[in-house]
Length: 268
Image (tube, rainbow, N blue to C red; front, top):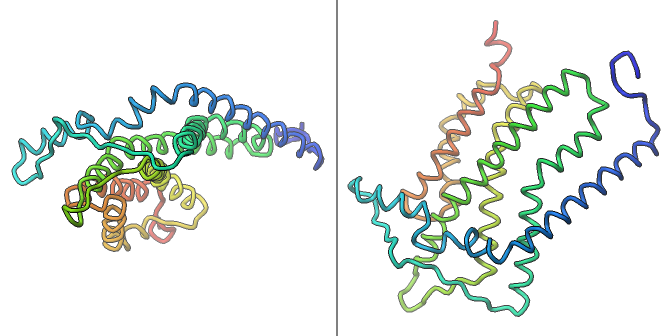
């Protein structure tokens, strides 16, 4: 062990062997987790993934109560509401079963995957770098799962409710395919998980001296417009749905500003 407390230097091939061992563990972990989700998928699909198709979904009930109390809010029916799905491809149901099991395994194994990669890079870090990496690891996982939760409980149901009920003409009925539903479901939920990593990215850039707090105050008005556009793109619905998505995204912007230090000139 050297004077810095790190492990002795390893040769290139020793590093390669250590990395290969970590990658094998990651593959085995993902495979086992995927098999578990594959077995549990039929019951999970009905009770979790398809839950936003039913009018009894928790967000719909909350919005229905708000609409009954606050004047001007659009009415939201819950009783008898249901979005039916159809399958038009022979292999779709099997492929959805496989791909959904994989993506769920990847998401829920993500903390363990990052930890395994951490065991590979940890010996090369100084003590202060290890402390910062641990905090970033915990914060990154927490924010990612908060984003996934928001995508599942708010963003996707709002988008589904609007798009499934939208008609360019009453003569054209909506028939939502299984593939279309799952593509939107997975993309919106994972997108929100990534969006919630923005404060962590801002903190890391601040630590590197690339980003300072005055950036957020200088471009706040531009950010409001940009985030409104992002919220409207994520939920192409009415203004109420856009605001429901915009508010937490804007809170992430302000949180990022608090995590970044002022510019050196401002500290003098």
